[in-house]
Every structure is written in C-alpha cells, then in structure tokens.
Image 1 (cartoon, rainbow, N blue to C red):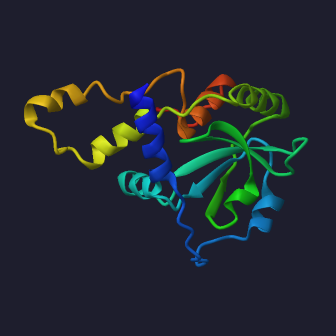
Image 2: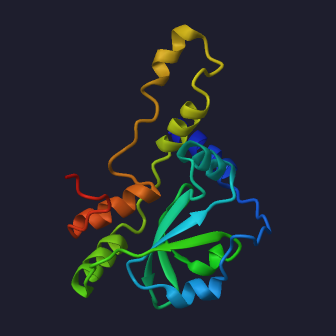
Length: 188
C-alpha cells in the first residue's frame, strides 16, 4: 500500500509533461490523422522526466507508444495506451498535438486480425500501469543508490514487474502476440 502510494506520487512527478515548442521534426497532427489506419502503432517523443530517461537508456527519440483504433462513440481519432498514472485508457490523438509523432504500420495485417487486435486492447482498458517499472528505471539510472551497501541487496526485490499490469510496450507486444503477428523479425 505504501509502496503503491509512493510509486503513484513518483510517477506523477516523473511523467509531468514539459511542452517544448520545437517544430523542427514535428509532422502536423492533421497529416498524422489523415494517414492513420486502425492497428497502427503511434510512437511518441515524450517531454517528461521519465521520457528523457527512457530516451537516454534506449538511445531513441521515442519514449512512448500507443495503438490507433479508429473512431469511437466519443473520440474521432482514438488511441489505446498505457500511462503511468492512469493505466490503460482511451486517448484522443489530439492530446499529442505538441509532440513529435511517427506511425508504424504493421504489414500484412488483414481486417479479421485487426478486429481481434482492437478487441483485445479494448478488454485491457482499466488495467493499471506497472509502477514497479518506474522503480526499475530509477535503479538503472542510479545503480549505486544512497543506501548503505548492506541494504542494497534488499532493493533487488523492489521492481521486477507484475504480469497482471502493463507498460506501453508490453501492451503492444501482447496484443500482436494475440493475433500471431510477430513484432520482431524471424531469426534465420
């Protein structure tokens, strides 16, 4: 309970967006909207503290990902994503109008698989974010925490993820696994 409270407060602090008006690489949100198809993965260049850490660790501009599902009763350009504070939820792509975005389109995805993919994702709405991943991220950034050496071993048990919870990349990988559509190339 206390760990959950601390994790939530830490997640709020680390995920607070700091909007940068750097338009050098940004594609217009209207161009993005006109190109999207259900099942597309939308990569987001986040603008938060945790985004900067993820970008540094992965050596990538992209720190977040969501899947476009199309139009819903309340949103015209709906994404399903997992956010640290909110968990798995519906989001309008307009929420990312001040972010650098890219579209990744899965090839050979037929309409039947696309529907199964989206149905799987919709069932995940309400799942909580695995806050233990925030702790893992901090442990990676600060491998030598300000804790006496004799107590550092106890920190190993903190984190390590929870299979009943999700992070953005896990949700996407599980959704594509559900339809038998690999997201990594086959090894020869």
